[in-house]
Length: 282
Image (spheres, rainbow, N blue to C red):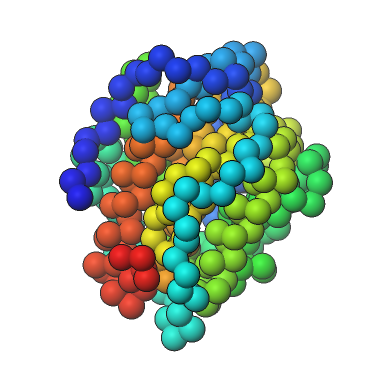
């Protein structure tokens, strides 16, 4: 399937949502943050986040949606024989700006290293703590053995859009699958959360129903608020064998169509570079 250039056209749909910060999950793994070049909004602009290109928009990101993914995940169990990838192989498998037209590399957001620090939500309860740690693929829970992150920007209708693509290798495919399952489950039980990253950050979450990518996937949109600044962010978690991909797209609205294009390119490259992790859904 042809990956269309990311031209990020302006759309008219508006959704009431809190919006927020240039930092998401503080970077115990460098680059597990929302890109600093993200389009920054006033936290008071509660109608700023509209549906992006191809958006599955509808409800407020301050109210968690409980609908299941629109396409069933692969029924195949995670392959027990699949081997974890080394950091070197992850670096070879992560996309570059040339893999998706419209992307520009942002090396300032590049990083590596599995997340070894557990994050605790200061409000929202256990489900929100689970969401934060599943999103960051915390090694103590998910068996993360290596990780790389690559930052990109694209031009949106009102300014830059920031993209962060992370590949995390797990000691088993079951660990990678648990990242997807726990993120999907916890997002439904955590409409609002705060956590401390040197300052209080608030997130308003809403799971989205989008077609499954790779072996399994889940997508969440979030208004992220720190102080008086904010962003609109959409995040996709995708499993391909023993690898979990985390794609964050942040800007002035929710760019779900662009997220799916980047995810498709990421899955395709990962499978070509490392056929052993090829998704059962391919």
